[in-house]
Amino acid sequence: MDTDLVVRAQGGDQEAFADLAATIADRFLATSHRILSDIDLAEDATQQALLSIWQDLPQLRDPTRFEAWSYRLLVRACYAEGRRTRRWAPNIRLLQVDEPMAAEGFSSVVDRDQLERGFRRLSLKHRLVVVLHHYLDLPLDEVAEVLGVPVGTVSSRLHYAMRAMRTALDADARPTSREAAQ
Amino acid sequence: MSTDRDVTRIVRSWLSEDRHEDADRVLETVLDQLDTTPQRRTWWSAWRRPFMNNTIRIGLAAAAVVVIAIIAIQFFPGSNVGGPPTETPPASTPAPSATSSPSPTPANFGDYPSGIALTPGSYVFTHVEPLLITFTVPSGWEKGGLDWVLFSVENIKAQLAVMSVASLYEDPCGPRLYRYPPVGPTVEDLAAALGTVPGLTFSAPTDVNVAGFDGLQLDYVPPDTFGTCAAGEPWLWRVNQGTTVQPAPGGDDVFTVRILDVNGTRLVITASAPAGIPAGRVAELEAIIDSIQIE
Image (cartoon, rainbow over all chains, first blue to last red; front, side, top):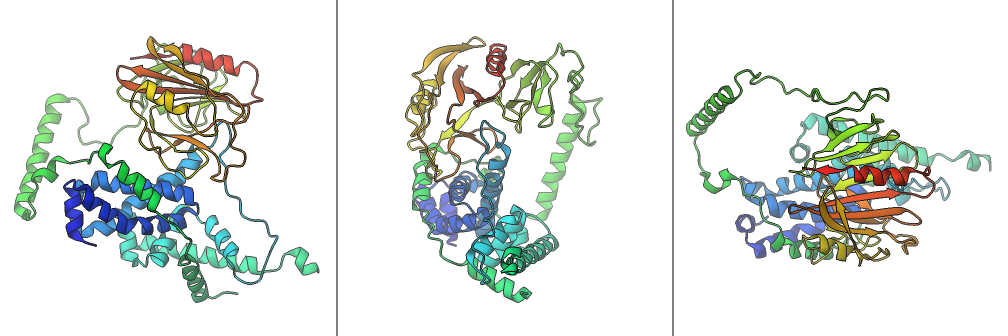
């Protein structure tokens, strides 16, 4: 990350921020899309995170820590977006929730649907560690820093999440009763 | 049976697949908002020294503690300085039971847990600072999921919400992008913007007065034309308080928006009721709004 850009953006330089934002926007959107499993929520989270970065940049004490700091804001935005659909839910109409797909179309081959299903069943905090570690390739100590939790907590969340994914994949790999009867 | 290594490999491969995200529109929207989004500067960021040694740091911290202690003793001699914060609700808060009599003093609505049936009586919203918005609730109402949302107790709920609006979405059914240029700050700006929301029809704004404050009222005119909304549930605007959104009305919903200018603060009151709620709830909504007082 270009520290000079960060420092200039901290000082209110909009061009510098535009360059900075352009370098991270795609990655932010891709990351939040994977975390939230919803492109619209991901766009909102990315938009909110980028605006928060602009607003709070002057408060970043160490510009060399920009990357971890900016991920923290993205995580916060993802939490907010993830909560948002739940909190307002008992309204005049319930907000639509993506339901897991039915067992129709089962295939013993590991495919996207199985992964998607397993991943959607994870809580947001578990998805976060999976995406930060396995998609962004952040080491566990950096994931801990971004999330503001101890490394041990990250490890246990990751262990739980991957075990749940494995269980989901294995369960999906078993034939349904209808298929077994055929 | 998959091994742990298999699962890790599969998950990593799946996560790294190209999902064709394109952040250009998001980026463009963000950059368009920079002029109207001030940076938050802290007092320390203006003068902090890059190389502050530990002696200075400890000295400043100690001085700050002493100053705070002196101020605390000066102004709160009888208080439990340094003790744990108390979460006890104010003494005037009525007990949230269905049998107690209405409280003469409004209770802080924010002190109540979500989903609890409210004792008929007066309550106060404090979330739109600096306003104190007092209202009276009849029986059959409960606190919603937020500190500014009132629900009727049925499964299908009538709702009253009081808020300030941060930004409208470009299209309730489209990508979740804020409208640009942003909606202006006045009552008229928001009323005019609501008149152009894709997929929804609102009545022409009419003059309204709530608690002595003038404003405009718009009523949703059914039906919506969303059809099947590709983005899921249509959303109308983002609320300033917290990170929540107002879902758009639809179908045969009753949905009324009152936009008030309260001494420079644009306050929005929405009343909504889906088809099928018990008769009388809409009238109760109106009675609750009529009871509002604002300080």
